[in-house]
Length: 274
Image 1 (cartoon, one colour):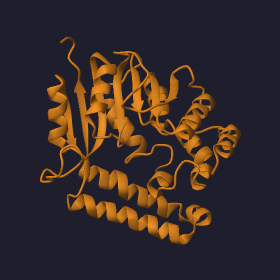
Image 2: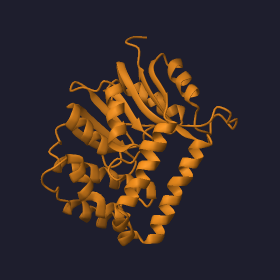
Image 3: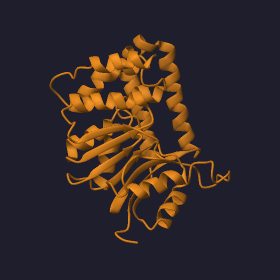
Image 4: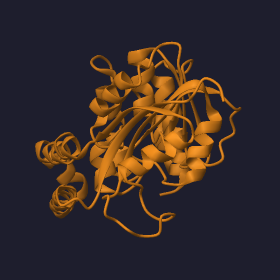
């Protein structure tokens, strides 16, 4: 799939009229997702616009916990096609800048913002999350859902970009507490993540283990969506793909239940002065 082909697909997008904005966007982009133009992962394809467990409900929960409002400028790190950014701008009235390392994702996000009439509140840039081209203290909220790189350089960059009194709003992979490997090469435990943030002087307001929620709202919901629209996925990708995707989702549920991995959630506030 060439960049030129994907550009042509994006340019041809037309937002269907009427109804819920996020559902209209999902309908518009689904053929491109099924064609693998933005990735081939079954999780990505079935998640759709919001490529993280829990979809729009996860975004709503995190936004409410972070007390997102119209005065906020949010940096959405690893924004993919901008689904959470659209939801935040449309539902909470804030400004959002989204960044992603994928040029095709950013091209799609910009087109979606324009079609949704949200260009004044949404901006998207291709950049590496460890080295972002923004001024110190430029954002009120640093936001990431399910794609945090467990790298101290990322946290340092978040801290640089967050204004005093600003908030971190994160859903991130966590490893079991008993995992002993190289501390520089594994996902952090929930408490290790909290300790790193507190060591930066932040106050942690919310620290949740999301295991059961991710199973129900995440993997089980994805399996249900796949079953309900089985004919659509089978027509585009084959019945074998559907069966493999369902098996993959069940494997992830089993892995979470045995404690192999999970997700955590954190809201933390940067000190007003240092």
